[in-house]
Length: 188
Image 1 (cartoon, one colour):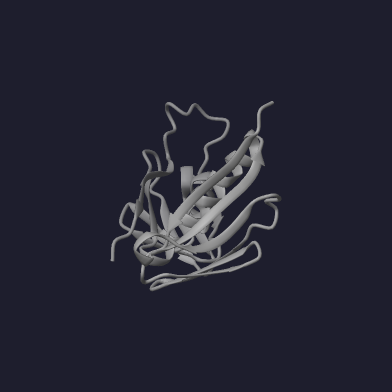
Image 2 (cartoon, helix red, strand yellow; image 1 turned 90 degrees about the horizontal axis):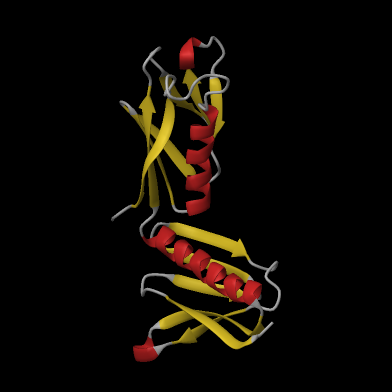
């Protein structure tokens, strides 16, 4: 198996974003908030801050003598850091559509839970957990999940979608549910 001598990914840092690197712990601070992630599980990978061309700062993720897995890990960590920067500057928004054909569904937010009532005429409400760092609101037949942490936003949207999964029925007939239909980066 051939090894690649040097693998490097560079993530540009905008002027309004501050990045701090403490070992393998990366903290990104921007106009919308602050995110911290610990990448200490990524052995053999180096994360450092560097001045790029024209005085612009860059986060450099690199490794030496990489196998295929470690090469992929460099790209993954760079993508995570890029998502953190996008999150603190713009934020993320997932839109879900409430679809029902048999019984009118009621969706409301209560604390850190989304309560889905009268789904397929069931007496017991279905409950989806809202992850820390995500905000949920209901607009007519849409559920909007927003936040700066893409993982919290995505997991909350997935929890809502999973809570309305139809089991033991023909999916072609019972299309009721709440489905993700749009993932977007919020603009200022």
